[in-house]
Image (cartoon, rainbow, N blue to C red):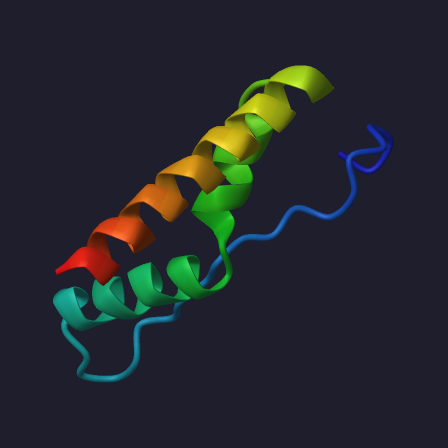
Length: 75
């Protein structure tokens, strides 16, 4: 993919250690994927949002956070 102009592809890699179970390696892999925000990047690049639509989504999320904060303060 060097000629596509896309940049560097990040891949999480976990090598199985001596005597380590598959479950532990899978747990380490999931944690690594989560810390590197790979899933968030994939979702962000999976479809295109026009700038206006992106702005509306951002504002809706801000309203949602504000309502949640307000409800928390009421309790």
